[in-house]
Image (cartoon, rainbow, N blue to C red; front, side, top):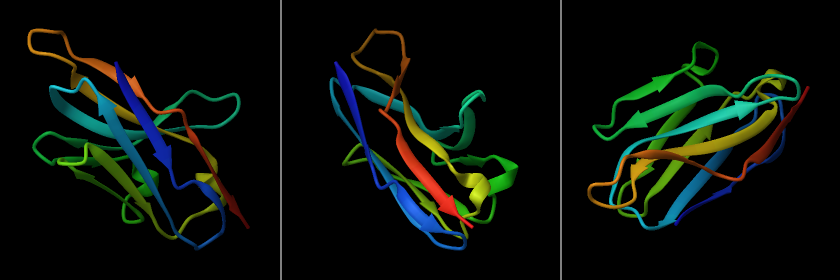
Length: 121
């Protein structure tokens, strides 16, 4: 079993900052990639940022220059530093790990429980 625990969401004024964290524990053999997604009511979950095993990062256009994804391999933790937040960033944010739980197993996606980020204008 793999568990992902998120923290760091909350309420912030426009222009403010928040830092999200997501720590994975359990049966983890190898991690392919980590990422953050977000979802608002009535909409599909959308990619925010990803970081690969080789540390290549990818961002959706709307957060480029404002958000930074990073990771701590030793701690199996991924972070999302969010600066210059806007009301349209308001959403539930989910972390994602694409990993191998054991040698010879197929990789699969694991998701955090979600954390609410609310940006007031």
